[in-house]
Length: 411
Image (cartoon, rainbow, N blue to C red; front, side, top):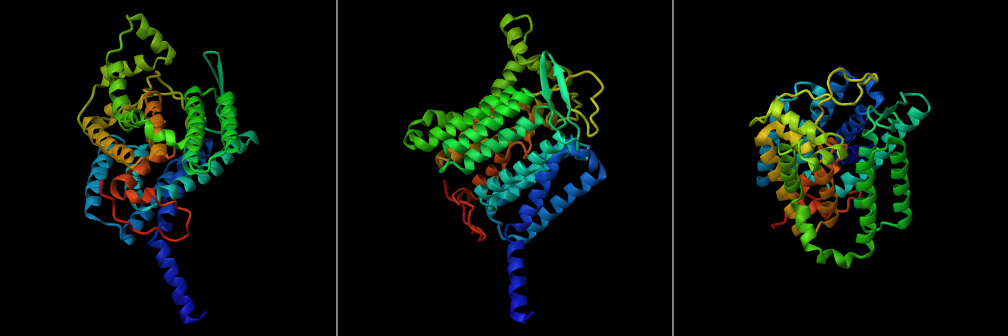
């Protein structure tokens, strides 16, 4: 090998490592292990192996940050907010396996210099591959294939540790597909994803994720073929920008004010499968603290070996009630401020697809807490981009060149 060729190869490798290669190695490993954590494959690396893999992901992310040249004044405020939020979550999440939210803030911050379209496309492809591997493995007996019967409903787990995990992942993949294909979305592609959601709904009986996914697909088609209508829906987009704040207030009010003596509330609680009652009981039992508290909620999910949780069911599904109790008032105020400011900037930039998807996530979180983590909601990383380097939302992510470190646009 000649000296010039060796120098060129070394330079190319260094360029890629200081570009986005290290980020995607770290994020890809994190994404795959997070999805497998929700499946019965988790038994093969539960405990210390899982901790070491996750630690490696964060170490690679740290190396990426050291190598990158994306430090600007406004990034320090983002780093401070993410550090505070991460510190609060560590305080109340002593078990290493519970720290998905901590690492989420690290990836939100590091995603600021990566084209979000590139992250979305990468996540979509990786998620499809891993999810299909788990489902196929369950059919061939490589991992457990469990079915649960409750309240007249039969729910297949399809290789995952709870019936809601696969529909939640499919909902995120559907949203990613709508975003990635927003300018080229077709009826054929939409039908394929619609059928996939129908099949998963038929097997798992997960209604919330199914209806939201189908609505997103229909909206994606309408936005593709009737783009001129979008600018006329200013009120809807303004509400979408404030959707997380609105859903937080609504969730807390209806949970705090729940009264079983009122017929309409009792009926609503029944329709929501006791979510209001359980949330109200949790608030009464544990209360709310400034910096959160460690709370053990017992749900229907199985452990890595397929064993059910022993104890009284008291799981709180509403994400807004859950984060308020577990992470505290300071966390919720900072978290909502970050989301609302990011959503406002998306509204001003007319990022209608992200606004729509984020609004559906906000509504979904009223009844389900899965979207709090990255593998169930990749669009958290769009916050890091829009708040610290918004021009990266304009970058299509298709080029093999490293995206330029663009200065953020003044809003």
